[in-house]
Length: 239
Ligand SMILES: *[C@@H]1O[C@H](CO)[C@@H](O)[C@H](O)[C@H]1NC(C)=O
Image (tube, rainbow, N blue to C red; front, side, top):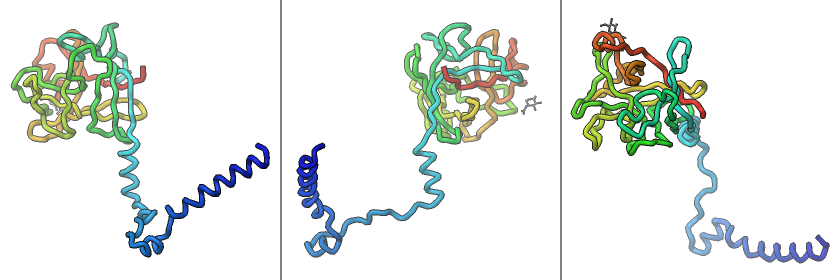
């Protein structure tokens, strides 16, 4: 840039700046003109607790991928959670077919209760991956002393910590049941009983019927069913 051009530019800039100070007048000047003082520029420095809270809510973790079903103790991969157009939607593994793809937003600890939502569902609404009764009108209870099961299925969105909610399909559902280990992607579920109780909620897999469901006591479930199921883990893994 030539020196005289620079001079012109600078003088224009200076003349623009000459107008600006009126926008930045002091409170004394404002008061002299009958205006209220400006609000303080700096807010009180926040406490450690409010900083921690803000970080948790402001910087959520977002996980995307498929849901891999693995059997302990060796983490043998059974497949991914399936994506069927028809009844039985996600309540089993894929057996070579399409995997359900999901997204989960959770605070930085991975601790829920959080939702997992399907992002490539072949089935119609609802799209949340959750737990629900299979039988209309049956409000399910899980307890270590009961043989009961609750289906692993697609459900409507429910409030965190809420007891089973009646869906428009007239079954009882919960979506916000998930937590994740951010370093391994291992998911854990927490069903809430109708009385607000939080029973041990284990994911079970019956390979013969290719069905996934939650139980409160796998031993009791197996004693009351013809084909055995075993406990499995589910991991949210990148595609
Ligand atoms: C499951 O039920 C069996 C049989 O009643 C019992 O022995 C076992 O302790 C129960 N498991 C849990 C985790 O409570």
